[in-house]
Amino acid sequence: MEIFGIRRRLRDLFRDAREAEQLRVQMAGVMTAALGWSRGQEAKQGQYGWSRAYQDVLELRQRFDALWERYAPAPGMSRKVRLIAGVNCGFCGQRLGARVATRT
Image (cartoon, rainbow, N blue to C red; front, side, top):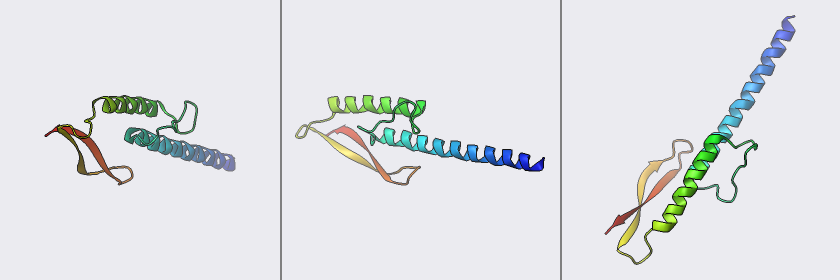
């Protein structure tokens, strides 16, 4: 009887490990969408890396990009675009920069 209990525990352990791995992939997808790196390669509902949070962040990023395209300063205007330096991604450690429009 004890062997069956061990089998059940091992099966549950492997199931939990698979779920944890899928959650890691989904969180990486959320970060990718937030940074705007998923253009043209968006995950669709039902795929391994898709989650509701990913879809929400993707739609928010698309709205941000549309606003940026509409209101971003054109070259030669009396505005400049600068990078805010010194920000690192908490997930991958990569250096990030946020574009900010300022008047000169």
